[in-house]
Length: 318
Figure 1 (cartoon, rainbow, N blue to C red):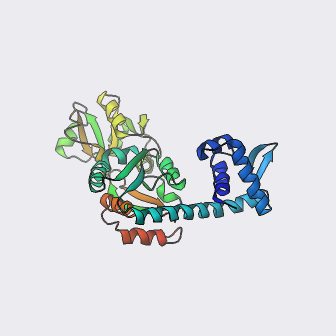
Figure 2 (figure 1 turned 60 degrees about the vertical axis):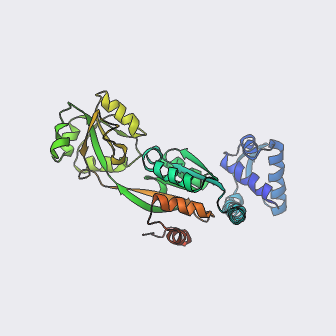
Figure 3 (figure 1 turned 45 degrees about the vertical axis):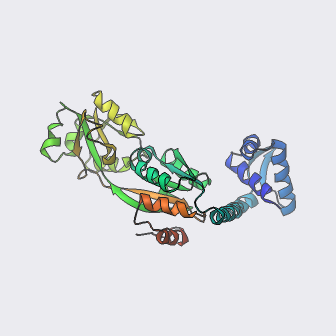
């Protein structure tokens, strides 16, 4: 048994049992992947994959029991490589961050700037995606650290740590009936909002669940005319007069967004928690802990290591 065989098994599952796609991911040939899988089955004395002719169609019952063990073995092998690299080159390497658009656009820039200045020999890679895509990049070992508001806490294989709270605000063009409220500090109501066409985030993005919950509790049916994945798009269509925008407060800049008036909405919608997540059992190099602490100062290395050592399902508190 060798790691090539284990990687062939894992990649075949990840690629939906498509051996051609698995071979491309492993930079080898499709017959080579087939051979590795057959040799592993022969050594173990079990059939791992269900087949229709030469095509893989799924995992057998023994295969489903075997897969988590294979995942753990490969994770530990990757941890060994990273641990060796960490001691061989303390301040050189690669760090991959997966984040939603809002985090990458508004929360991460100063952290990335300062980190790159402190670690000029570390290659930083930034992937953007939906909260579920961020989680999947972590689960697949393609990202070291994930940053998102939604989804991350829902995976037992991830250690999702609270970092900071944020709230929503409402944006309208100057001249809109609600615009005077920005200067007066009047308390906006959900009933007032429900009287206008609304533009906000897609479900599953940037606190959208709390927006929906607030209207539902009051028995209101908002007129949602457009939803988008990021605040820049929302603000663009608000400026065009298509509706009232509900965005994350961090996405509004008074100078950059001079065409819009911002109205506090923290009393309307529940506050949101941005989380930093890592894959449970993964090895983090020293500079990864420094990046986490730069983003969320309370998350010291000791706290992160303590969180990673907790059993799945345990509640982590700072």
